Image 1: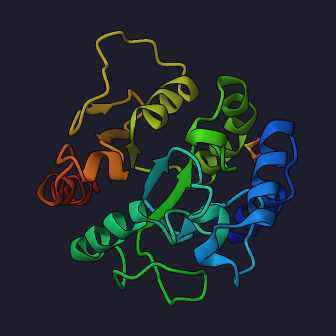
Image 2 (image 1 turned 180 degrees about the vertical axis):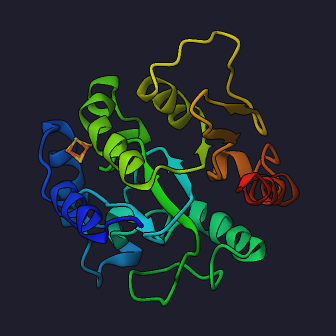
Length: 223
Ligand code: SF4
């Protein structure tokens, strides 16, 4: 049984974190200046905690919040094009009760899945520095300790490399690629997917079918 209180405590710590000066400045400035289309909204402007089912066996790891997506809404992959590709796929696969993800109060519920990130604060140009990712890594480690996931789905190379670092895994044969699947000695599966960014989805690098296959496989890997 997963302790919800441990998770709640962790999420409170994450939301209050100010370890990375560059990111604190950026996330707060974006929240203050805003994008024209969202002028009437109050931006979250803080680190974005994980989101999903506290009893999850699948942990999904992304990169970092988008400036006007989850840095605005306060929930991973919510309110941007990446989430507009991700959540419909999760809905089709049975992990989400709905395809819509536009705010923290939209009624979205995940089942057996928790979505988190390698970095919790929106970075300039969508690029967290290695030092910032190192600062943030202990939060991801604690989520792994809490959930003890059977399957970790890495959305993009940054997430995959972070997971390998956490497990101190140095097998040079393990490469990132869409659909790449590895199993740790301790039994956890690591499944890689291209990130559902517009850069990938609009160019056809990541198609709906390719993404659906990832979630089908994640489901089949559960014991
Ligand atoms: S990126 Fe992570 S470590 Fe850095 S300020 Fe945000 S929450 Fe803290």
